[in-house]
Image (cartoon, rainbow, N blue to C red):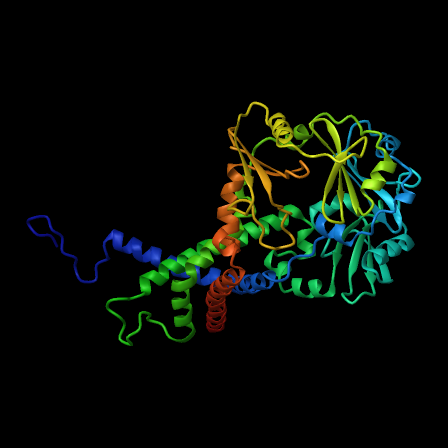
Length: 502
């Protein structure tokens, strides 16, 4: 019925106003959506939080440059008879390759060269290209690396530890099990004899509880790059929406001023109450953690840097082959070297010797020591960024918000001091250069700096003030992960009970 002033009075049994009905429908679907996404994903969330704690202490296996140098034997210069320019000409390479280094492999000095055709190897003793490595030689290479005899050797194209796209260019492999205390598996390229990966029994065990479930890194899925990426994107994306719905419901149901009859701020009991209160306290961390993981998959292109791809090449300058290096002089200055890297800087060949007390840089032709001057680095950096103005040169003596290391061996090496050169190109690119060797260590633009906060900071809590206090960072990670585990495990229990009732 209606009154004379136009006010409507609802009849008994009539429907609620449209806005109220809509709000009730929204709330109902919020409950339904949160309930079933929780049933589907809470076990995965619990696995993610537990595996993240494992990853705090055991990283995914890797064999990076620092470990390669540390485990390498000193170069036996008595066997080095082939100069780098001859090694390149023997391969038919007129221009300098993207990467070239010299090191020992199974008692023989070998040049490792990365060309447009792929990774190649040349004996520094005979000058012949190494096109295939048999099982016997692979066992010798592995035994020399770990200092223990080989137990078994198996051919593999890929497995759980060499499954990513980066290994495709180096496969197939020999997987050599050795008799050392760590029970190591050494992965050696069947084509070049290069060691590309090593794992220990401890790493393999803990990674099945850590990185493998955390990244959904199961070989059967991970071998298909895009399928794996879409799986992570969709599971984490739906998880974000489900968690946000749960936070909204939790806030709707909590009472801080006028509490429920039980005196509690929550209307629930038992596991439901634990899930409700845990979600209120730790829900924000859960959402930001899942969001940052989702962002790491670069949805819609993400925030990755879209700057120049030829910066490193321009920094090196023209590279017509390599100089005819004085091997005798190089052997004298690098008597204790374990690895020799051949590079170019501002169109000049340079050699960096690794091992002993640290890197030494010498002239590419004469092998005489070179003192790297800042003016030379700045000139090469300007050449690497044509059309952009160098606006600032900063020498970092200590880590800062963008140049730091968490101690994780998967991180790229970030030595100090380092030069940071800032340019005014559209990406506001920063170049980081080692002032001792002149080597470019990395470039980062505005997109990369955003990712540093939206992914690294939110996902790993690697804030500068926490990096300098590792125990505090670990404590916070444990505390917040504990809240996430409470939310997830209680959600699993509630979900199982719901399924039983149904």
